[in-house]
Amino acid sequence: MGRRPLLGAIALAATVALTAAACGSDSGSSSNGKQTITIGFQGVLSGDSQQLGLNALYGVRTAIAEVNADASAPFQLKLVESDDGGSPDQGPTAAQKLIDDSKVVAVVGPMFSGATKASEPAYTQAGLLSVSPSATNPALTTLGFKTFYRVIAPDTVQGKAAADYIATVLKATKVYSLDDKSEYGTGLSGALEAELKAKGVNATHDGINPTKDYTSEATKIIAAAPEVLYYSGYYPEFALLSKALKGKGFTGKIISGDGSLDPQYVAQAGAAAAEGAYLTCPCGDANTDPKAASFVASYKKVNNGTKPGTYSGEAYDATLALADVFKKLGKDVTRESVTGAFGSVNFPGITKTVVFEPNGEVKGSNVFVYQVKGGQITVLGNIANLVKS
Image (tube, rainbow, N blue to C red):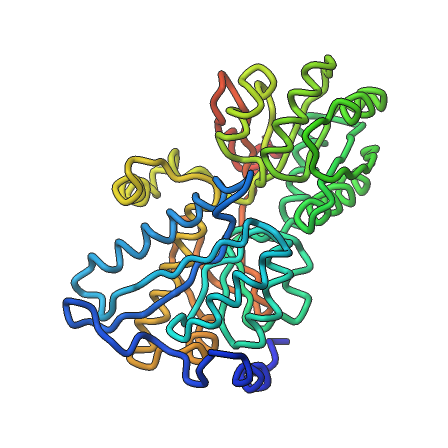
């Protein structure tokens, strides 16, 4: 079944302060006389994990720069940014900033699953479309968020692939699954553990809130004698955990998910502690993908030589998919028209063809595994292919 019509949600939006009933594209025009359409970005632009947010923001900026440089594009794009710090507590306020800007017709974000879960009720009530490049908690598309889409696979997909790799390639029979108790962490660890147990792998679950000292946790893990530790959380904590495990002499393999897939993990853990660590992600590496060469060049040009990172490609694709919808809508670009049209998008992105299920899940995704080698994060390949070889 498809989603319920949005008339009820849009009617409720009329009562939201400063949100105009006819929210739409900027009534003004750009210096070249084209219509100006405003989109928002909500993500983690401050705090310990801000690099993941910057990766996505730079992907959005790259897409906007390309659209605005295209003489054939019938409009110009304008961006409004809103920082939620990756926090569920800050999410609703960050969302409301974009909702209250009547010119914003769609949002790329939120990013982290906790902030997304906290923000989406407001977006649904306002009838404002949001497209996440990175929120992977499986439950997000089951909670009745009528304007929510994501261009990345949920952790049911990543968890299964990670379990396949651990059981088939690493041939582990005993795994310690640790999460950070966040919406993201618990969603990923739950999916991973279910798949490991289905494969007959002994999986021990544990959860710990983010801390600055993982010494006691490292001792606990070593006492359990697992062959593999999988951490479901973000790179600042995985870095500290890796250092603690290295210091305690842990000899098993360490793995984490997309929340840790960033060079900052290696920088913060130190090359010695990070060496050999595996990382899984429902995202490929644009920097090594020949099909993404033009995107990489454009990204570097727009962002002062910076290379694309985790979620850069997904945010870029989300933005260009929105631009594709705007083009098809012509002059009728409003919150309501964008939300009504986006579910039917079929856009050939650099990460995947962006096509959605009725519940807002993107169709078809691959999960890749990476490893730290010589202080650099290196892609090993598509897990689906690796488990067959």
